[in-house]
Length: 253
Image 1 (tube, helix red, strand yellow):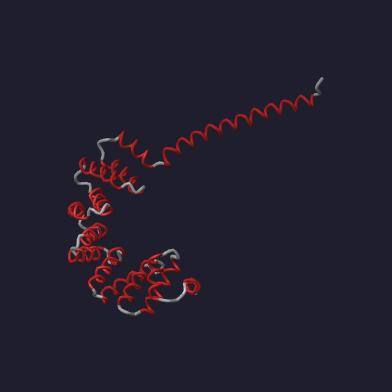
Image 2 (tube, rainbow, N blue to C red):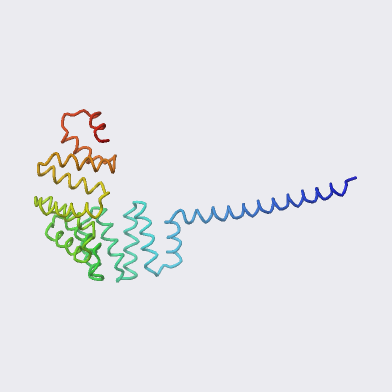
């Protein structure tokens, strides 16, 4: 026959098991719910498609779905949904900008120009839109218009870094080294930890025949971004016959 102490102990044991069992069940239920929710939220495309289905007559869900496709590199599919967005709302500035951006990524630069132009008509004072239109003109060989758009971007925002870099690139290709240097130096001043700016300045110095300066700038780019293959290749071309092992050693200096 159980003693009173044993009975109490057994009751506490049963209650403990029931309590642990209940907590475990709650944890399992919450875990399953969280897992299901994570499946939906983890895949942004699935989530946005669900919202599009629920709101088929609103442009914003199509824009958001397109943004998810862009993130995953599926630009052609993104383009289809962006077209749907402006069909629903012809005044949707962001969609026109995104269409232009996607068309540039798809190397359909001539097609990008009217969409980016429309975006600027809707909201004229966006530096990013002027910069993207400038890129479209650059890629179609209309460099005068490209420079004009990059300059317009800087009138809106004098510190807009992409336009500053693009102006440097345009002047470099035109052989206007002084102007290119001005913009590359400004980019370095604004963003001194960006390897691309050192690479651009190094390329300028190399074209000007200032090989020592170019070498220093390429080395700095590689310190910031050790896998920067373009900077490495250009540095090799300057170093010349030096051994690779010597170059790797010196890059650490």
